[in-house]
Image 1 (spheres, rainbow, N blue to C red):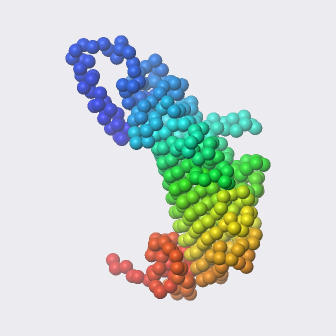
Image 2: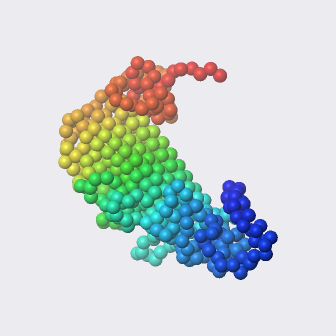
Image 3: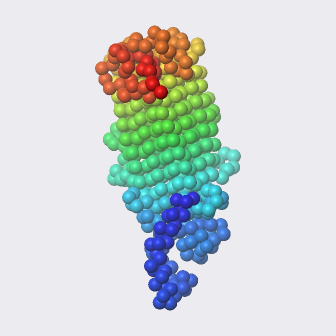
Length: 485
């Protein structure tokens, strides 16, 4: 609240000279002079206001979303909504904003946060939305709720709409919680950050991006999408014969993107489609990372239900430092579906899987429904899989040699895979870990193979990735250096 008051005071100072001149020279009052939105930069909305007001202060606030939707807002404007109240959906288009370096801010003022029945940003750019809730009203049985927050582009010509940040939002009751979509060629969005948001009780997905999918197209609809510190849960999925549902965070048609420090759980239980839902995943994407995340209790009535996944068409993808447990499907899955763009250079390292693969797959699971030559360079190393009586590693379909490498993993459980998969330096028994860490007497210390490619600087716990002459097996690199207090 203090930051909002400082913003308001700064804006007041900017216009203080004009107000003083009006007082000294006896000019017309605010009520008498004509009102022009171009001469202002901060607006207030409250159920106690009036749409005939100028909106320039809490005392002269506008009243409704209808008024906001009817105005055109220039870059740099701020729109504050009285907290503790619910507003109909707000919508912005190409007549609003447009400058990623001078963004429009939407937030709350007063007590509590403002609640919206939806937000739409269509063919526009340059917005920061913070400290509000989006609660979609219930719909009649058989109908679908709308998305909570929509970023939607109908532009063409490889146009990227730039500059969005959504922070500290709670979104619930939606079809998709926060949705980013471009419908033509490689046009879409760039520089989108979704930070510290909570998405729950949604039908199809928590956070998603998608574009015009074509296996022969070059380039991607979206660039530089970052999801960080978000919590997603109770994304139910639904009986859908056309596509998977019940996904936590699923980003596609994107390049240069990461999902980090997020948690997804209790989702997918009503999905009936196969392929199915996953907790956190990418498909049709390039230069992407999933790291420092947790996924658990991902379910399905169809298939998949993995905690984490890099799927069809991912190029230069990495999953690292993640914790997966108690999922119906795999903990960490890599898969290529029929009709996808080629999948290559995939790394799965320093992850922990505990009691996953309660369905048909393995805790580490690999599949290819396309041609053999559509996949290359897949690496699983220094992961820890612990469980009882389930498959630790499984592949389906046949593979060419020198494509998949599985090294230095703890694979407690069975292995069922093609003969051409390269295994080296793995451990297949109960490792007797303590909180997933090796003890000083563990035979796994210095028992792995030193890999001849970049293994990263750290293990799952933040220790250096090589301590001793050889790498340890699993996600923990034991360090026997004593600290001195």
